[in-house]
Image (cartoon, rainbow, N blue to C red):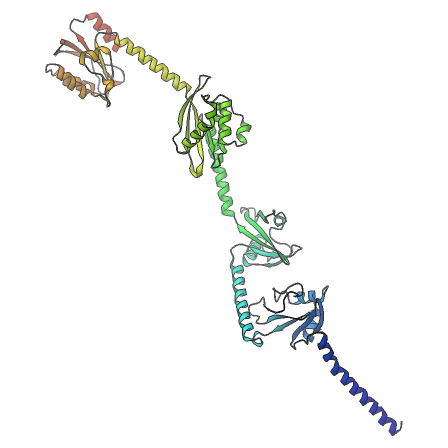
Length: 510
């Protein structure tokens, strides 16, 4: 090669190099016309939609380690854990800037997203490199983020976030402690707590769940609620062990009451605050003849009384049109604790029915069969009337005092002789009051003191008699005889009374 050839090659090479330099210098100018020039930084990326247009060497290396369906998905996978607020899709609805704080409190870097024309510029920068306003905003975001982290980490109930596949992406300290208590290990993201229950949440996103720790400890109960978020579901588990224990205690208490009430002969019907039958015992079925399936269906008060009327277990109303008003009056009186009635039925039975208010607006009705008691009372009253009629046939004045000195009985002759009627007295008549009335109508006599002492004496006593002078009936014979139950019979007879009649009366008193 001649010297001229060498010179020619050098010239051609020089021209080519100059042309290359001019081309390289021209390229950025042309790129700037089609897209914004990216800001130079260690980590800087420029996107047009989901596609990467430009990236710094460090950023391009990081994205290469987390490839995805789109370049933006690669960005999300690379920086989403560090900056949780990073959106999964490119920002298209804002022309301003977004500044996202890092997950770690010690990480002072922020992710800055700028929307310029049709492109999105993403940059990881130091807060000190930002403007004063942006720096204050980042500090505020960091403070807010720290507060949220502190709130979640110190929350007493387990909280965790799961992705669409059910894997745990994040959990708080309470979740970690519970997981370790149940499984004895650190949380496994693919084996979350309460997984089988969280799959059965109702329409409101709530479910009651239990965890078994070991055979020696009782089940742990939680109310689990969920809320859908952008990239998964947030779960909250509230400890309800105290509620469960209270429900069990209440259920056991009700069962104990039911067993106790089952032994009662009195019918019991308890209605809750809504007016529905909450509890009844077998005696209610026996007394009212109401079917057990009807009572088990928890009828309301109106239906209950309607069925009683149909079964003729309560008195038939005189006016059926006023029946509803009568039932309302019954319920109102029971609510105030004022209802107590005696029902005389067509069958000859007699029921005592009472209504009592209970706590929390409940009402209890008690139905007791008092037919035997009423029959005994009627028979006793008939015997008293018979005895009264019999004693009224005697001419002698008869009066009976109890062991406490209270007047119990007197006949017509006594009322006529002494002009006294104890039944018209508002207070109980005592032997002291009676002796004062006798003394006013008789001459002085020491026998009155002996009569008083005899009646109030609880020792063994023997009959005795004495003669007294009445102001109108001249002389009277006073016979004092002890009778049953410590009572005393005092009989006043005129002196012309035959010995036969006196002996007859003495035998009857004995």
